[in-house]
Length: 393
Image (cartoon, rainbow, N blue to C red; front, side, top):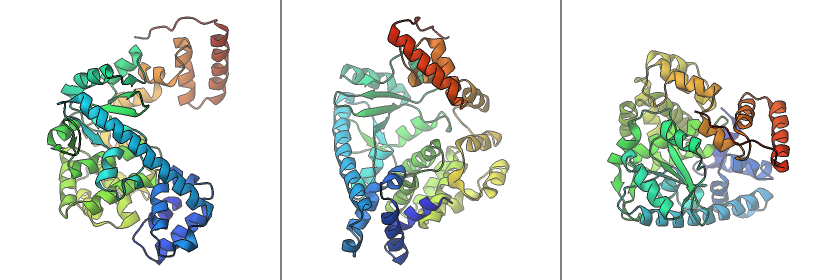
């Protein structure tokens, strides 16, 4: 397993001689704060130092000052997003909505909340309420990040969320589906099982804790390895905050939604890092629920934290697990991205054919052609010599 991941996990574990030594090593190594920032644990490490019995001996290094600065930035960002969440709840009125991921977990399983950084507000609504919720937000001044026709088709056909900012600059992802890795029925099932929360404005609800675990466990595979310690710490925190039977409930729901392998691997990494009992129960419970291909793959992976999303997707498809995107669609989209993705990733003033060619060069790693095309397109745009974007069906 990645040594930095192990070192951070040890430093954030229950106080012991090992954790103090790991914290001291991080203070000596992370002089520019880059390691903690990459793993999204600057706030957590700063709090661990501040709570240390020998704080005077460890709080001097530059790393600690950088971590504290980052913690203050996280606190300010959370207040910014909390204001946006209050605005969103008022705008949506009686439309049920659910905060997910960072802005949900920071207040439920972290103490204090700023120990868990988050950069945006992720909200889940029922698929039947998506258009109504989006229309209300637009009318209230939330501006979409991508308003082009191809981006709209992508949200409808293959995407899962609408992105927008309010007047204060807060970033929102309004989900009405979850990622292509999971079955099409999962999002609405989670919304139906969510519980009202009086602390949230409007018709705000909270995911059940076992469902919040599933969302976190599946989402962490979307980031390429090496994966951030924060993603696995979410699962550790949920496990410690939940009731004793939480592990059994997670196993049952992972089985219900055909999420056995991604949840098993996520729980296995978390248990190796912190030996937290709920995650251990998930590992024990899901081992016997794998299908032959999944079991073959699981036994041959020494470091699950380094598994690529493509391998996980392939193992699930070969095991005939439910997913919103089929194997053929996944393969095709790795070769030829949806026009909406190209539209979002490229300059709006470039002609369409140039945007498509540049994007294809970039995903295949053809850096020189992509750089040459980018420079040429910029010259054409700056000189006013360009054609109108072509429409792609």
